[in-house]
Structures are given as structure tokens and as C-alpha cells.
Image (cartoon, rainbow, N blue to C red; front, side, top):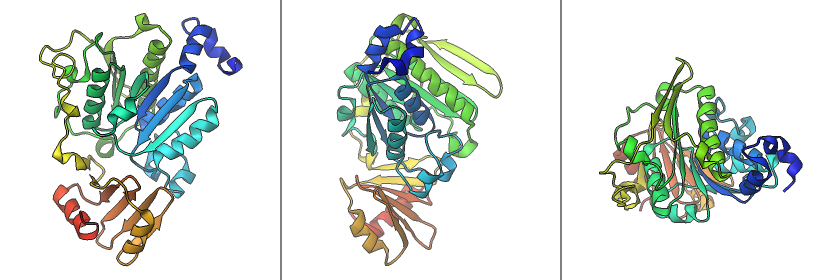
Length: 337
């Protein structure tokens, strides 16, 4: 470790030389490389976290650049997966940090492997189904979970520590959302920066052994309307299936897991296959659609306004509909079982 890189951070008394050494020996899982995830990743590599495992299922689009700080127009032109583009940028910022990029979806099948040997999990996702999966896995394996969510000018964040705080399920019930997303009501980037910075600050406190400084609240802010609330993370709900009953419902396999509506994106993700040959499908789709292939994905655009985005790990984004039945029909018509 080159201590001169972190000299100003080490001058901060709560961190110091010992805290910096602890950071360099730590590892983090960042789930999502979008708005929150890119700011989180930026802060973590600059702080000198030893290893970052980053997973994201999407690719860079022009509309991302307004708030997803790690990307630029060249990433859009190359249609790079967000995880790959973020890895390229993060390694240029700090070559001492090991950055592992995974292009894929977080599922019941891979969550155990993703959590292996990580000290903390940071939430950069855009949906509660994944957050509840992370929450349940973290409490099962006793890994702290740094939660963050953002929409419009509002954001929420909390740092959950198994056996010491309540969990996400205690304060937010499944299905309790209001349906608002960044793709339906918008978002401004300063709100993203603030929430992700809170997430990383609590993470740094924990990893450097400053647990007494943890906020232990669910913080809600609205940077446009100047609102700031803190709700104490009290004892867990006695009926909580995660932190009290240890049933971890999100870790139970569901037959519907292979199809996911990406809220506000006019897209359904279908994940039936374990892998896809992009070269093979480029030939197949060239007969019926406009096709573009990159080293990471294949885009096929049909005259009817439906678009397929195929990834090597077997995922297919059916863009142009949020109707599962219609998406399944198109998938079955051109890809099959």
C-alpha cells in the first residue's frame, strides 16, 4: 500500500494509519453499477478498499450520463455493460484495488458465491426484489448491508448490522412501494451523490472499527424541498421473517424468477438459459431484424418496435413492453425454450 496516496485520509483521526490498513484488507460487494453504484465505487476505490466485487445486469445508454458519474459517451457508443465500463474507470483511478466485474443478475442461485469473502454489501440497485434478496442473504450470513434508494430529489439510506440492528424488512414491507422510479418521475444527480455518500461513510466507519460512530437510523432526505429526517433503527419486528424468525423468504426459489419486469423501463428480462452464443444468434436474427453485436451483448431490433438485448449469461431483455405475456410470446417465437 502506498501510504502517500491516502495521506489526507489518514490525517483524519478516526481513520489514521490503522484504519487505512483495515480498509486495504477489506472487501466489498457493490450490487448495481448505475447511479448509486458508480458513486459508491468511486468513493470506495479512492478510499483504498482492498477488493471490490461489482455486479450489474445492464449496459450504458445515453440517458444514464446525466447521473451515472462513471460513464461517458464512448461507453454509450461501445454499448458497454455497466460493470465492464465501471471496472475500466475504477482501475484507472486506483490500480492497487482489485476490481472484479460481473455482468449478470443477482439471483438465489448466485447470491452465496457473490457474498463469499466480502465484509460488507452496498446497495446500488433500482428495485426492492433485489434489495430484499440482499437483505435476507446478509442477515443469514451475518454481513452488514448498506441500503440506499433514490428517486426524484428524495433518497433513503440505512446501515443494517445483523444482530445489532433491525433489517430492511422491519421498516419496509414487500409491495409497499408507491411505484415511482427514476424512469417515471425522474431524478436529479445531487440527490444520488448525497445518498451514496452516506452509504459509503457508514461503510468506512464500520470497516475502520468505528462502529460507535454509526448513525443507526433510516435517513430520509429531499435535497430540493430541504427536508431531512432520521428514524431510529429500533429493535427488530417480532414477526420479521428475516432477522427474528430466520426464514429468509427471498432466498426461497420462485418459479417467476426467470421473468422480471424492469419497472419504468418498458422492458421484461427473461432468464431461462445458462448461456447464449452471441455469434450464433447474430446469424439467426440477421434474417429478421437489425442486429448489432459487441463482445458483451447482442442487440436485435424488429420492425414492430420490439428489441432484444441478449447477454452471454443467458439473459434476454425484451424492450418495448412491460407485459410478461407479450414478452414471453416474442421470446418463444424467436428463441424458444
